[in-house]
Image (cartoon, rainbow, N blue to C red):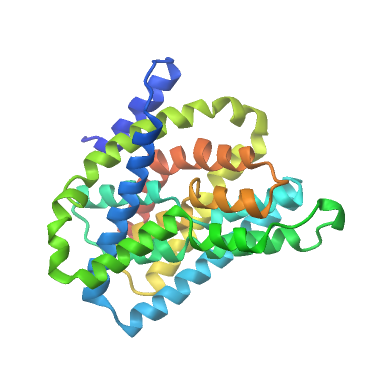
Length: 315
């Protein structure tokens, strides 16, 4: 039985964190890894978009946006009524789970490519489309029925900036446009962005393993409900992503990737927007759930599970 190299790096990072090994990534390096992955994913999607642009893709994109709207609407009542969290906390966490994790998607891409499973090359477009809807829904849920005494709302201009011009949106949309408009000239940069992708992802996962373990103390404090939610919600999102992928006619590889997008939770783009939109929310709770619980679950269990389900569906 062969072990996926990306998961191996994640486990190595987790082990290093557990034994308190003094492995420290320079902040600039970690940020560079994130920027690289976002640009690479955007470029891949742009190159594919230039080859596969069609009205069918437009319809698929609209339905994918619908998935981004539905997921936080499922998560919020569970968090608010069953978990009995404050409205702002429930809305913030729901937004995190309605959006996507670029890191989780990158792991899923490496997984399907290692298994020699083909997929629609324009899937990165769906990553971009799923960034924004959940943020808007989360803000709306927080404001519905909120007491006037909750304090002044966020400055609209600052909020719009975080939603539409956060680093993830700028880099992935920019990468999409560059890949789409550059044609064959994009080959000048593909040796760097495409061929080094898995190596950069391995370093990223090493750091994510360390960071996930660092959240263990906070996870213990949030209680069993958040632990259960952080595992159950990815399964729900993954199931919906699978059904949608089959419904819009994606291949087995595309189905796996859309399932992973539905199962993932943001820990980069959404936290920045929520800090502006909902300053009174407990943002540490959101990050602990998405990064400390859901990300490790998806990397170690979720992705192989969704792959097995897709393989069963497609025979």
